[in-house]
Amino acid sequence: MIPVTLHYANMTTYPLERIVTKSLSPITDKTYHALTQGKVEENTFQGQSLIRRDGELVLAVLPTKVDLEKLASESTRQIIVTKKEWRFVTPDGKELRAHVRGEQQSLADLTTVQAVKDFVNQQWYDSNKASVLGFILLTFVLMVYVGTLIVIGLGAFFLTLTKRSRLFMIRNFSEGLGLMVNCLAWPSLLAIALSFFIQDPVLIMNCQVFGTLLMLTWVFYKTQFRDSLPS
Image 1 (cartoon, one colour):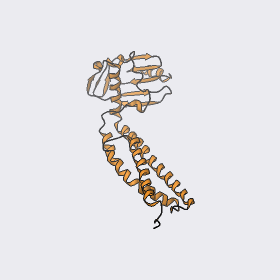
Image 2 (cartoon, one colour):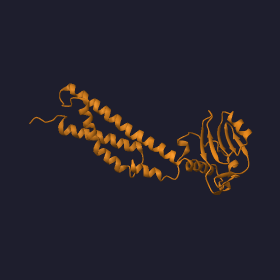
Image 3 (cartoon, rainbow, N blue to C red):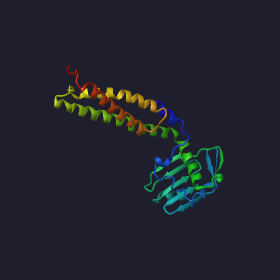
Image 4 (cartoon, helix red, strand yellow):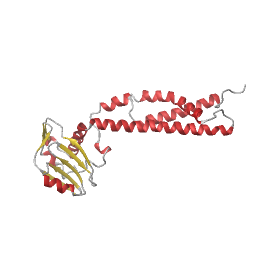
């Protein structure tokens, strides 16, 4: 986990839409100019109060109290920026918030929809970096370790079933579990080494799973799951 943690801790950005789908969709060709007329100074957004719509998408810049009340009653996807924060609102009313960050930056330099989306995404990331890191690491842990535990548990269970054949000497679940854990050791070391270069949890999990199965096959080839082989 340490190599993966260091990698993600050094990230400079992360796509908001991987966490909240279509969260940046209110920024379109028809709406993005509402943001480019503004600027950020000392962690405060400054500019004109504007609301731009594109169908069911709304981009609201420095809305008034009346505007906010009206927007709250709508079932639209919204991005709202006030002097101090960004609000990403889903059609069902759920909100994700971020602080306005920056010392002195004019948004007039942002001349395309993608440039504005990148700016807003960076604002969200800079405000929520610790939470994003925790979310990514939690996802990584769940995919790798929970997947590994399932493989070990199922492997031990199926090994226990072999006792009925009387060809093998695995007598209970604990013995099967011990064998699976031992077979996991080398693949886990390989996965740790890979994590210095690759931060894909699916690939690392597959490395552990298939490595464990290969080790189990090798153990069977050497021992036939018996304490001793007939001479």
